[in-house]
Image (cartoon, rainbow, N blue to C red; front, side, top):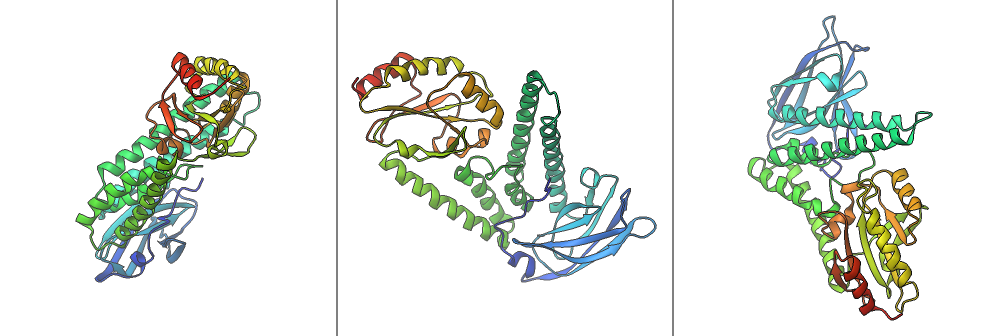
Amino acid sequence: MNKQTLFVSLTAAALLCGCQSSKVKISGRFVGGDTKHIYLEQVSPLAQNVIDSAVLDAEGQYRFQIRGAAATPSLYNIVYNGERIPLLLAGGDRVTVGSVGSVVRNYTVQGSGESELLRQFYQSFVQGAQRLDNIAMQFAREGITEEERKALVKEYTAEYYRIRREQLRFIIEHKESLAAVYALYQRLPGDTHLFNGDSDVVYYRTVAEALAERYPESPYLQSLRAEIARMDARISLTSQITEAGYPDLDLTDIYGRKIRLSSLAGKVILLDFWSAELGSSNQLNAELKELYRKYAGADPSFEVYQVAIDSSKPLWITAVQEQQLPWISVSDLRGRASSALGLYNVQKLPANFLIDKEGTIVAKDIYGKSLDEKLSELTRR
């Protein structure tokens, strides 16, 4: 697993210059590794470049020195025994970094407040991601039973959301730190967004506002503001689409085909959010199937675009097939991190939106008899 996701949007200026600069001294001791070589990397938005190396002495000790370091903390990595330790270092820092045994699990940092905060987040995040990897590997075991598979899905989902909650908690609690900026850009395997796509702007803005008080000259602050501006522009575009009709979705069905919600324009559409993992929508699906059959020949046509808020593809596909759901079933397999939830401000499941043939959302969270009556108003049979 890649234990490090770069500050992909941060400017190289943070690493190359500063109005004030001085030396950074790094020393420490590593014990229990298989190698004697240790490296220091400088991290830029596009690359990680080794800027120094050393050989551990007989007691495992080493020393590095950085010249011309920026006045505000910038990102560096110590690389030892195939593992990376991220550090946020500023000119004048005198830092001690060491470990006994597993580097990521056991390393300690002294002499840099930002690097110590970063350690608290990084160790927890990486260890959680490793647990997810270990659970995922168990799916490949031969002879795994259906009961064991469901238990693994439950375990994986619980651990996934625990990690996400801890990540967001760290960002909010330490919003004035550059360690929070680092945490903003970390992603679990398969994730693109921090939480809900462009609605994540609230976290970026919270950190940027706090950072402006503590590190007003940091290039990371300028990069955050640029990212916020891009998110705001996309949200503005989404709002314009909403005024004209509804936010569009382009998600994948169980056969791997992309299907746009807007491709159903001119029909009466029920946009339905559910979860096979929660297992609480089976009865609602059964009732909806009756209405789907009832309005099969309606004019205008009636269609269901059902979005599964799940992270397990096998579980989702199995539920669709077992329940013989006849409508459009799609998912981005990002669970509660699905951007579709943010676009429609869905706070709980199940949820739905009824869209008429003109593209206007005419009802929300409508079920059973109420849905039947509304469909009767919108269509002719």
